[in-house]
Image (tube, rainbow, N blue to C red):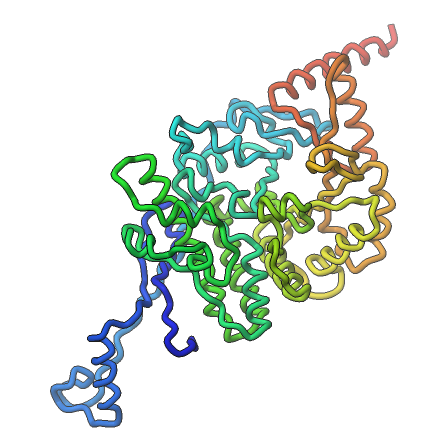
Length: 489
């Protein structure tokens, strides 16, 4: 790879994700040359063009050049296997309620095998201890995700930003950290501008002096979006006290994982912006599959990407494909978006949020995204995975409450049908969730289920499996009594 004069890559790990279980990586370094190595390089340069003698290690005794040693191929990634489940404690929802989408709470235990669920990253991590670290290890959390998801039809899981994914980058040992999508946009923009993409500084885990020397977040993250919190934790000394030592180690492992992702894009820069985007998309896909496993990702996971974040999500949570306070060309965003979404969709279902169907500009934005990712005419995405579009009718400032999309979905479907979109691969999820509560909750559920079934929309509910089971039982008892009364004497 071409480098500017005097530029030296920092130590970077090879295969940082390892086996997906948080194991210590085997580092591969490209270090600043020492004075001795520089002298050796100078002497080697002086010998260029000389004829190797019989004692030269580059020749065999006959004077012929020795065979070049074979370079060992890197070990392929080891993805976690599909979990073994005891299905005796799982239930089946009545067929007429198969479109209901409850919360995966609690994540394990009783749940409905034939329903799609919406999961929450913090819920799956479990409680924190007194030291603010999570009580569960990263491996235990990943196993919980795999077990809970394998026991149901599918699971919506947010996986979009550094602090909005299954691994927490600091508060437990990371398993397979996902590089934020905005990093791909930044690398593409640098490539488009002809700039050298600066790598992430990633010293060995135990080199406190090297980490302490990284005095600013910009020095740590190079060309990429900074995280002041991750810089603060990673550059602390690793003390002998367990909580602080674990937190620092976790942060450094996350940085080294991100460094490997960044390096993959740097290595592709000579081939142009599209190659950079493809390399970044491949690293994101790899992290997805290392965390969930290939089969689970393909059959059960619907990973959520935030294509249209609100201001809070951009500024405070760093979600989406852009970076707060940084001008990035629209073309760079479009290249990164298409590469990431199409690559992830080749692995399994993908959900993209969120669009206000009452606003023309957001409807047009959604359609433009769909035409880029799942066109009816043009390059098709491999596989049979589905794209889920999260839509609404106007949300509050927090992005939680507001109107659902039920009143606006038919008009939008008509607009999508006129665009270059493969509607056979498209599903919708209306947000926010439909509220049910107070008196006659079972009747409310039944009424809403009928309404949403008529609209061909899933019914998103903020209820867990056990409460939903009681409602189903009550509705089934009512149905049996109603049919018994209807029978002739």
